[in-house]
Length: 492
Image 1 (cartoon, rainbow, N blue to C red):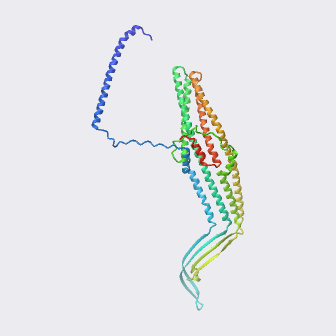
Image 2 (cartoon, helix red, strand yellow):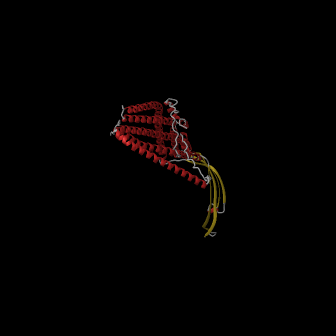
Image 3 (tube, rainbow, N blue to C red):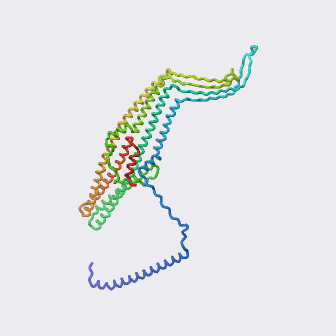
């Protein structure tokens, strides 16, 4: 709308009068506000003077909020050794199995028994009288006996084989406990690294959310300014909505992995020590020969040792079955004392000391012994085949973890370069979008590619670390060396 100069000049006096009136009103309001503030300050000072100095005797400061201590991998491993239910169960099972040895040994040691009896007897007897006529009488008397018996097994093939079998079963129990110790290191490392991975994925989703929100805001401003399109706004809004769903899933995964780790350690796991990529060492296994690791596993693997102990126990089971054809020989020493032990020896006391041997020879048992021998032989064949299958499978698993480490080093380095390239692509697309040579969808796709590359890089790092723990556990190496090595790569 256009106005003439005369209209402007006519309106100028009115505008000047209106501005002057506003200035006067503002001055009055300012003076009134200042007066009220001064009055309020005076009232506060008066009330303070009447109340006197503040009483600070009962003033209490709020206690600081408790902080959850940072939990590292070594701390989680030590907590699992003490608190993990499976670990406690394995220890109790090993202790129970070790009692098998003293029980078998006791069957070869002397057995001493004491028997004591005392009876009250009422005897009704009919005997021929002096003239041949029957004569009846009743007699009440007390009889007693005491016997102390010592039995020493001299030859019992069954008990000898059982004792050797007990030794093999104790070896199996120790091997199973060692295997569980190796497994707990793998379970703790897996749960800990998985928790770190989900935390990193959540951080990536949140950073992507910030980028999408910035893109949406820029698209709306460009649309308002007239240089953008509604399609750009819809695409950015759709990407942000999808990111919200991904954030919910990522937070659920974080909560689940933390609870999974807490189940093993039985302690709060909200504050975990994170991985320091700069301190992390990317190196192949030492020595860098898969044959060496397979040979070590056949010697030191708890799985192999447990099955070898089972095989030895199965061989002794065969000997126990064959013992059914063999005789037994025991030495027996006894001292006994009796009083009125028979009706013909009422009020008579006897002390008897004896020493001798007892020999037992089985002659026929209906084929039972032969059947138990065949059963034991079949069980031995089963265990030997299980041992061979476990040996082959163990070699395959070691080969897999070995390759996972050697190729993991190359994969991590390649993904590090891919992340740097994706970051440069994001910067280029943003500048091109601002210049108008790229669309918003292309910029969003570049952001998504960067997040995917960073996610793959984080996953490759944690897979590499877990493979080192698994390889050491499969080979039966020192349990804490790899845990301490990875723990040194975490931020303190």
